[in-house]
Length: 386
Image (tube, rainbow, N blue to C red; front, side):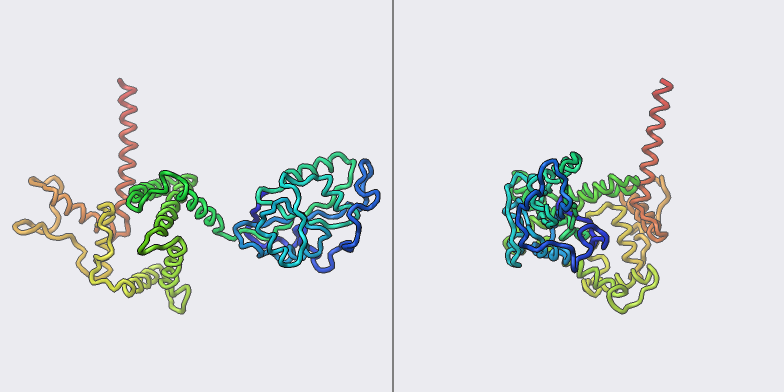
């Protein structure tokens, strides 16, 4: 049994969460070992209750649900086998006595004896679960020779959406400290990997491979967390993953006034207008070309520049051929074609695709993939004929 729980409040009918006010119990003065309780071969008519209380290490210690606090306060005995359990100081501070037992796990027979006579025992589950206890209880129940207490699972705290990101940050922090390779990487070292991971993600998306997409999204996320961890060590301008997340949260809220404020945007085009207008005010750029990464793939770059020009009301047509040459785009295969001529024609096609709502990079990649398949068929046919 792990220390994680469903990302929702426990169902009201979940065992251990019902009947909180006035729950049946036994006065704390009942002796620990009443006569006849738990005698081998004699089924106990009142075997009591055993509450297995779990908590998430991703939630701040001490933040437990109301049912959890009630069970802890009403219990006849609270047990824990982990002397370093993060909840212990908070339970002690709340006046709850906890008996710390051997770290190798609970003996099921001993625990059932503590529950005998209608008593309630709460076991504060360790992070690695209580497999020895639950397996032992199952064997006792199967034997039929002893009374077994009612076993209830009570999530005292549970994960919220995104909680596993905390695990990723913790793992990355340890890798950065202890891995000989990762501990010396720089932002520049990682840059090629970032490009590679994004390309692999795009390929998975275009292939419609959901499992691959999930894996590649994780690889892209790793790049973000790795760069942020490296940035913490910068002596002059350090920042952390919290700074990165805080920055994008603020940006998203500011650029979505139709969601977080009183602005109106009823269509995707109006949303884009809001975004562009807000971004222009934030950046205060002197040119529509500012902020366009020139290192991106050429077709994507051409489409981006064309889109910026069209949004700003500037001429989106490719430049003329130059002094002494004809304006516009020359026909394919013209004599005297140069690299500049080919570039101009490709630019014109990219601008035309962008204006038509087509991503030229994706379109060319799809065409290249079909061409690859055609070549493979041709190879197969040639092999069969030979």
